[in-house]
Image 1 (cartoon, helix red, strand yellow):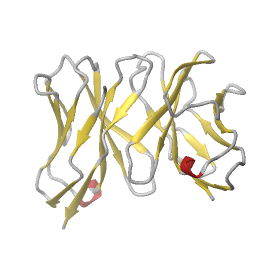
Image 2 (image 1 turned 90 degrees about the vertical axis):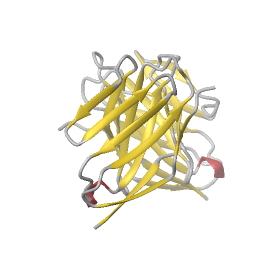
Image 3 (image 1 turned 60 degrees about the vertical axis):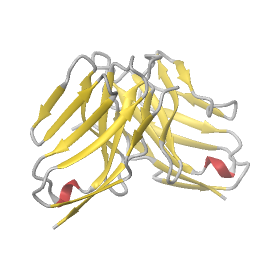
Length: 114
Length: 112
């Protein structure tokens, strides 16, 4: 069964460093998303992406964040200058075209900012 | 604003039914979801219901939707130890851009 994959599973970085979290959505899916979950808190929406454009972004998704689909298979989240409060589990998700409301999540990348 | 609330913990005995409850605020939400998260794993889409439905059954899972009270529930029949996980309720945001709004998750503990 096809699944969303994410790399790395755990990333440790120093405050102020740039990180890129990578996702490979399910093949032939057209809608892509990033969410995050700070330990002990709710899963929060960050951004949705369709047709090479951001459809919606949350207040969390400020100028430090960017997303890109560099080729036909990858979907990346970049944090330019990480802060301690960016430490969280980051989930990528994707949806197919005809059933756009079904979102399938990856296993997540745990980001630890020290 | 859009918000989803769940109780934090439920403990049941193996073989019993589990009922996990959720309330939401946005009455215009078109889809409501249940996701399951096992330790160290991602969010697994369990089931979802359209807002024009009152009930959906899928094997051991029954979803009930009360639109008047903005209340969603997930019933798991014959609960097994493998059902132990965190269950998240989510609603499809009114912006229709795919944004899901999640509850804080209910930890289901199944005792043998």
